[in-house]
Length: 347
Ligand SMILES: NC(=O)c1ccc[n+]([C@@H]2O[C@H](COP(=O)([O-])OP(=O)(O)OC[C@H]3O[C@@H](n4cnc5c(N)ncnc54)[C@H](OP(=O)(O)O)[C@@H]3O)[C@@H](O)[C@H]2O)c1
Image (cartoon, rainbow, N blue to C red):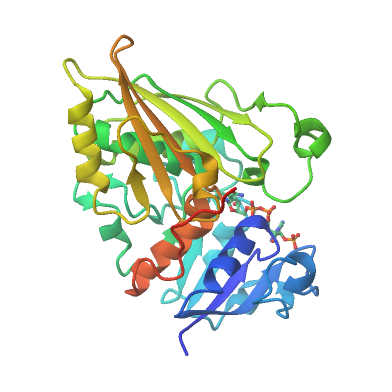
């Protein structure tokens, strides 16, 4: 028998994706699932596409129910995991899909989130360049991991290699993202209803107010130590899941595309889940649907003096549940790719 796993928030989108991925994992066995309004119902009732765990019954989300496992995945609304996680034994691996433990600077938390700050955990994007090499090193042996924000991982991985090597400037970054409504979770909201969304597109959190802004700046300063600026605008579009992030940065003087491509190959050439496409090719969201894959395409816009990087990922896989499982694999000393598909679902 492998590691015994509990998934809190298993009735939601992120928790459901953790279950889907772990159904194919050789070493992590889900034995407990918890919910909130759906307590007492089975996974088969609330997540009919998840056959593997269909008979598990959702229990209440409490420290008592989560006790006695080797690994606990938390997929709860932000603000709900901080106090709960504090009651889980120190030697249990806890992976939080929420935002409660992502931000290192308490002032960032206070500026963007309500409620108490609970401190930062090891950040769950293994491929992110850091001063020592890669974020992966900080995840080895960790017992507390903060999985990333989906938009934040797309933009950070898209721009980090160029900024880390000084090829693009950390200030004046611009990111405009097409995002699907599953990024907002399962609870119904009028602006996420089919009648409002189908045949339309609308920007939200315009003007630097989105909660992923400080997370992006934190990630991009890991190598340089310098905090830049990003103009970040998500646009809600009618696709159930996925993010297409178009990110641009001012190029340092004299930088040509070959030098930028070489930097991205150095950063990601050996990575399984983050891949740069050949020159002239750009990813589509569908190429990453269901996969723990982030695809990048880049070009240099010489006339504008800007680097353009287009990133596609599945917000529920590489953007959250896949990153959570990948990071847990590293922390537990398991093969990093265990349970994680690289192929998307198309058409
Ligand atoms: N969706 C994404 O693309 C994405 C990406 C990255 C990170 N995340 C993060 O992952 C977390 C979960 O997001 P989601 O999209 O899965 O949301 P969701 O679909 O709305 O699911 C929320 C889950 O939390 C439970 N819950 C709701 N209120 C609760 C409470 N007061 N106490 C305990 N449990 C409660 C729900 O249970 P019931 O259904 O039984 O009420 C459900 O299982 C969030 O922190 C989110 O920021 C999501």
